[in-house]
Amino acid sequence: MRANTVRHLFVYGTLRRNCGSEKAAWLAKVAKHKGMARLAGRLVNLGDYPGLLPATRPTERVRGELYELPDDPTILEEIDRYEACHADDAEPHEYCRIVCTATDEDGVRIWCWAYLYQWSAERRDIIPSGDWLARD
Image 1 (tube, one colour):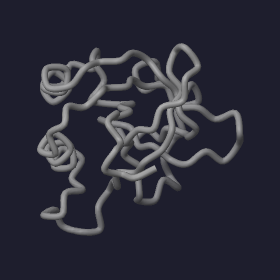
Image 2 (cartoon, one colour):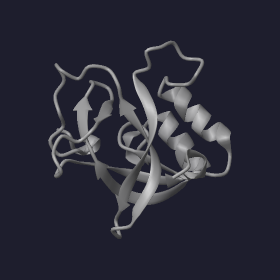
Image 3 (cartoon, rainbow, N blue to C red):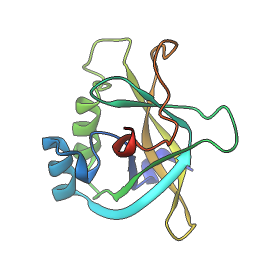
Image 4 (cartoon, rainbow, N blue to C red):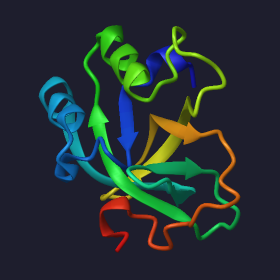
């Protein structure tokens, strides 16, 4: 899979439609919401937002939403800025944008972008449900 052909974004935290953030509202205007999806991984609670970690067991899944992105590179650039992993941001970046596969509600696997948490999560709580909006 060539990264420049990936046209979907998996969001699992403050970019989800019902989280109430301004950036989530912006994303809903500039990209097409495709529905709920899951990907292999774990969510760590970072306080005001979550972080995606790689799965350590085959059953670990993160619940989120898929967006189809327009053919406009400034959209991903804007999201990189929001996630503080743009080339202009100071390093080390808290997140990095990766290509992975998510499974949509129909069981179809879709190549997508997701933001992986890169800092230590050693003293952070894992969200057992894998769903940031259902964490309490």
